[in-house]
Amino acid sequence: MLGTLLYSSVFLSSLLIESAAATAATAEKTELKLGFIKLTDMAPLAVALEQGFFEDEGLFVELEAQANWKVLLDRVIDGQLDGAHMLTGQALAATVGIGTKAALQTAFVMDLNGNACTVSNNVWQQLQATLPKDATGKVQFPLHANTLQPVLNSFAEKGKKLQLAMVFPFSSHNYELRYWLAAAGIHPGFYAPDKGDNSGQLDAQVLISVTPPPQMPATLEAGTIDGYCVGEPWNQQAVARGLGVPVVTNEDIHRHMAEKIFGVSKSWAEKNPTTHLKLVKALIRAGHWLDQNNNQNRAAAAKLISQPFYVGADEKIIANSMTGIFEYSKGDVRKAPDFNVFFRYHATYPYYSDAIWYLSQMRRWGQISSAQTDAWYLQTAKQVFQPAIYQQAAMELIKEQKLTAADFPDFNVETGLRAAGVMPFIDGIAFDGRTPNQYLRQFALGNKD
Image (tube, rainbow, N blue to C red):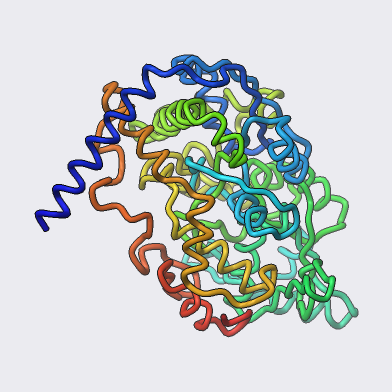
């Protein structure tokens, strides 16, 4: 025990020395272009810019909206963007070599939660007879996917399958939608890259495809899809426009999992370590600003990102989820204090276990085509998630008295692996990032190793 304490003391002292050096150091690159997709969880970037947190670090940042996740990824890899608001699964998949091959890293998690699954009015009407309701007649949300079974049967009688959309093959939305369906025994389909089938629709009872987030409501309105899983404000926009009804949030499917990250290429991070550290410092402060004093700044944040060069959606629609409420159907507004989490619960810390969960889902549905050892999962997580950089940024902010030690995990004992079972899942299956293969064997549907 004494040896552990002595080691921790020496380690923290060395971090303080490194932080002091980094404070005095000049960023290798001071003029930066960062990318984002028009979603509410790009907010830390906008806040860091508008509140002067980037400028405090001597950084002059331009934020630029990207057309879709593929374009964003390619531009980070080829250096057109210095970094970006990125899907957690994108960085992991690229590093593993699924799809685009590239070494990517993150030292900052943008947010937790923030997504929902919405069904069309047509599907919602077909569900009416079987919807669970309380004594007052209000629908009991979240809905479990077995509620969809009558609709699936109706479609099957016509020789059709339900068409659902998500934003990218390696997105949380894809894995959350699949998890929700599979928990009810509805097969979402396999990927079979070894057979040249990357559709994700092998053996599927529903058909899941890709639609960029801002296009989701219009695609639903056109009848091309019957539902989707996406981040805000695109579920709340469907409600506001009378196009559909959200039926489950990702907080209901799994709680407090890394959603988006701030991603950079490994080569960029190695070339610009001080710049990277300063970006992380500014973003940590932005996350703290968004959650401080029980979300008191959220209304201002909603107004900020409603501007056309950020998210470009109605301020009231953005505020629905950002300010602790969520509207399921018109007038059915419910409390959702943790729908968007930007700092509390150590939201910004890059936990290895979150990365391992994403990798487990890639294996479960066949994107990773062969079984891997538990050690491989951890090793891969450590290639992408960089908690040491986060810790150095945190120590510097503490030294500068901009934040306190109480705002962060206890770095003396933090391993980067959450305790088993601390994140509840909708099917009750416990996840332990230390044993991903054992976790996979618990599921009725999907690859089991």
